[in-house]
Length: 210
Image 1 (cartoon, rainbow, N blue to C red):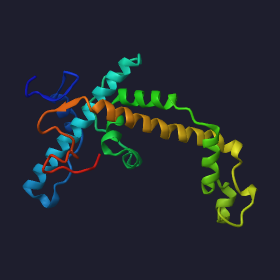
Image 2: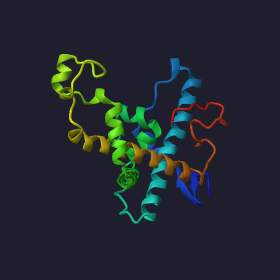
Image 3: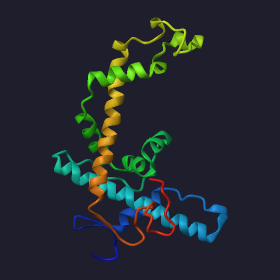
Image 4: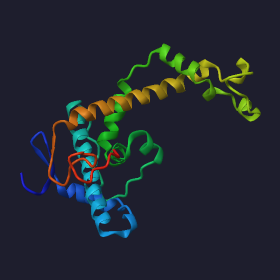
């Protein structure tokens, strides 16, 4: 291997130019108070962050091939990533960006989600424990308290809510499966100096942001 790689996955180099292309598409963070040391630190962390996104794409491409899934179209690294704030909150910035960046990661996530089985009892339990989420539009307009002084007519019937609840639980289970896969897959990655995980505690300027 040469100094031109950012990481090694199962003996295969992940080129630095892939990280550079992603960095070019993602606006840099504003440095703290404009201090040169803050700017340098932010850029080091940005490179580590981008390396994680590229590595996840590489791992996902391999996983798709291993599962016999049709390889997605090649990533276009020169396009600015559109990442929803809700996805960042739910998934962390690295995984959210990886899913926005990588067709292979999205395909793998969809495959894992499709494999999840949600028991009827789990769907019913979710519906019963989260009654406030199933108030009818009329009940919401009246400001009904879902935990007191309500009648069954104030709630969307279970039969109507069931499909949406099952879909939500399957989506959550699929994301957990994706994170489990990612943790296992990343154990085989070796990073070049300067491209480690931004939360790596062995690095002096690490930060735990995912």
